[in-house]
Every structure is written in structure tokens, then in C-alpha cells.
Image 1 (cartoon, one colour):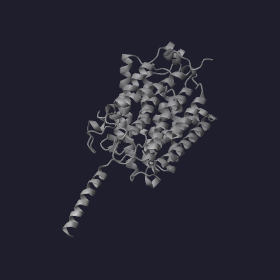
Image 2 (tube, helix red, strand yellow):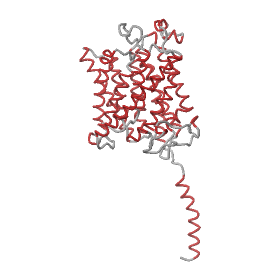
Image 3 (cartoon, helix red, strand yellow):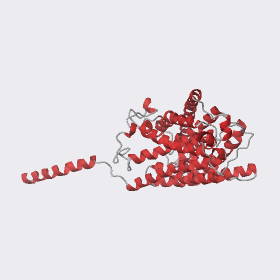
Image 4 (spheres, rainbow, N blue to C red):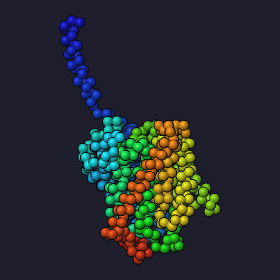
Length: 443
């Protein structure tokens, strides 16, 4: 090589190398398909609370309380949205101080480096591997944070003061939801993440969490006036069926959206969600038919939700046949827990928040450890089913104990400070008039 050729090669390299370095350091290119899907999934999950859950619960209460339960769903949507922006997202997903295999304070809850969404811009990503904006991820996770406390409403419907409900939800979100979400979903260094707990879309974070909190709440508040001797039939099962249908549709965003991409995992999550939900609806319906002689609209709607709940933790790792079994088992078990068990033990879980979400979440979480195994048609990395079931049970146990204790303390303190229940006269009149000075129906 001549000196002139060498010099020319050096000049060429001096031009090319900076460009290569810049290419290596350049931010990942956003995937428009993933972004579009996550925007859609986010809207679907919000649709689950308003109007889905509002109608589902609104139809099951007595007519004098229809506005109160819908109002609670709407108010929680506003309250949690604001708290999520101020500090909730940071507590749940800030990874500062986390280290895989090391248990420290940040294994349980995140820090505040993302408080008020500091550093979030239109171009920011959740990680170098993300192919959609962080703003979309924040909003998607916000919708999960919204529906979880809203589910608790079903356990204490028709008897809790609106003011007490708001303060309880704000504190519960801060001390229970955000830490559990962090431990399960924040990544390496999160307590239950490091344990290996499989929770694709919220079996522990959403359903067991809300179901156990609901059970504690209905026990602390006590039974509704006249329960169980006074008839308290749902006033509009049409609302409930429409709400259940909206939940079913919205749940595709809940589960398939948790793939965080428009890919094969999202497609399989959608398929197994449909299979498990259909199986659970039939399981509940036939169990009720056999024990009571007739299938009911309320029963099939409840079975739908039981199946949706149970498949949630498993949606990203189980196959179609595993989903079928999970759905059938959840439908039958939740039916007996929401009817026979509740009557036998005598607790007043008004709209079966614990019977469906708590029990369904536990069933789904445990069975995820079974059917995520490739040997049983799953798509997880489970090689030892017994070991994974133990890990799942440990995650369930931790969530149950932590949520029950913290929820109980919050409620007892609030009861001492401001009282939780409306008085007997207000309960008789109905919360629509007593708490909001409105009627659901002006006939």
C-alpha cells in the first residue's frame, strides 16, 4: 500500500467510524405497530373500569345505591390517575437501588426519582429494549392501578361513607398496591420477581390483592343492615350483563397488552383468555344448574369474570388446553366460594369481590405453576412443576398476608379517626340520596 493510499484509507475511516459509533449509541427506533397496539390496549383496560366495572357492580346493588357504586368507580379513576402521576408510578417502577439477589428496601418499593413523572418526554422509553414510548407504558400501568382499588368496592358496597372510601383508597394504593406491583413487576431486584413468581398480567398484583382487601374491608365494616335475612337482589341484571361483556372485551387489552408488543405472545394471550373465560362461564353455569335447578344470568356473568381473573397470571405462559382447565376449575371453585362458602361463614362480601377475584386469582396463580410447563403445553421455562407451584404458593401467601395486615390497619385507623360506615338511617334511605343527594331513577 502506498503512502497516498494509506492516507486515503485513514481519511475514509475517520469519516466512517464516528457514524458507526453514533449508530451504536442512537436510541432504538420506535415500532409503530407495538405503539399502536399498546395505545389500544391501554384504552381497553380503562374501558374495563369505566364503564365496564361501573355497570357490572351498578346492576348488582339495590336501586337506591346504583349511583353510589358508579360514583365510586369514577372517583377512584380520577383519584388514582393523579396519585399515579405524583408518586405512584415511581413507587411501583423506579428501579434505583435494586440489585438481583440482594434484598433491601428497594426490593419492596421503588424510590421517588420518577415522582411527578420527572424526565418523561415524548421520546423517552421505559428501557433500551422498549419499542413504544414510556408515556404509553405509564398510562397502561395507570389503568391497572385504577381498576385494582375499584374492584374492592364490590366487597363493601351499600354501606361505606364516600369520604372514608376516598381516603382509604388513597392510602391503600400507596401502601399496598404500589409495593406489590413493584415486588412482582419491577424486574431484577424486586422481591417476588427474584423468587421467580409468574404473574403475567396481575393475578397477585390486581386480583388477589383486591380480593383480600375486599374480604378484610367487609369484615371490618360488618354486614349490611338486614343481611342475610332481608332480600337484596340485584336491581338491574341487564346492567350487570352489559358490564360483564365490557369486561370480557376490555380484558384482551389487560392480558394481551401485557406482552408489551404486537407479537406472538400477545396473540396467544388473547386466545387463552377467550378459552378460559368461555370455560369458566360454562363451569359456573352448569354447577349452578346442577345445584339449584336453573342457570342464572348473574351466574354466567360471574363465571365470565372468574375465568378472566384466573387466566390473568397465566396468559403469557400457558397453552390452549391449560387455559381450558384453568377456566373450568376457576368457574366451579368460584361458584361454590361465592355462594356456599359465603353463606356458611356468614361474611357480607356484597358483590363477591373476594369470592371471584380473591379466589379466582389464587386458583389462577397456583395453576400457572402447573400449566406454564412445556410438558403440559405451556410456553414458560418451567422444568420442575412442583418447584414452580411452591414459588407460586409463596407469592400468593406473601400477598395475602401483607395485604390483609396493612388493609386491616388502614381501616381500623380510619374508623377511629372519621368512621367508615354511614348511619342506619342513611343506609336505609340509600347512599344515592344520603351521600350524593341524587337518585339513579326519577320515575
